[in-house]
Image (tube, rainbow, N blue to C red; front, side, top):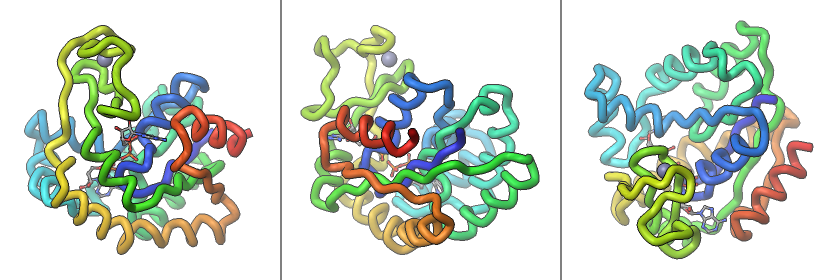
Length: 214
Ligand code: ADP
Ligand code: ADP
Ligand code: ZN
């Protein structure tokens, strides 16, 4: 099964993708994480994306489409993938349709995670992740079980994203409403859309997504 998780920054896409990946034989494809890795590695793509990401804008369609096009050919994607943070514009959605068709693959479902705007700032400002394995946490909503130790891998180093600050969040929300929200209608019209209540507790959102996926 191949699915998309759709929702504003901080909605819980990464959190749910991590859990779906654990529960089913599917791999999480986060364009945000791939771009952050490119920035950290100082690649050509990373150099182009760095300033844009810091400002909360969107990286060019061409770059992210190229990244996804290559990534879904990898062997680990053949059992199914969870797109987290892609597509984010209508041209990206159209390009995804084309490239899946060319590769003889299909898109099964698009899960929209609905969250109130006021909750997003709180979710983003409390977000941190394990520096070693990338597991995601939140200061109050999802702390590590043992303080300062990653539940998943036992590492003790954590990091916070450079773009998770109050000013950039506003730009990212703007980009979401301007560029990404139209995808909700796009996938509704294609009979792919299912919405879940992202204001619920993390476990409950997981349960709703499981039901939607069948
Ligand atoms: P996204 O990938 O959509 O930007 P994340 O999955 O990183 O969002 O979630 C943003 C923050 O909110 C994280 O710190 C995460 O632990 C927390 N979070 C995710 N889902 C929920 C939820 N249902 N309730 C409360 N906090 C949540
Ligand atoms: P969020 O928590 O906001 O959902 P992501 O990790 O998905 O964050 O993305 C972080 C940043 O990476 C975005 O603000 C944007 O600059 C860039 N980015 C990620 N995915 C895309 C995409 N599909 N198209 C354009 N830019 C992207
Ligand atoms: Zn870890």
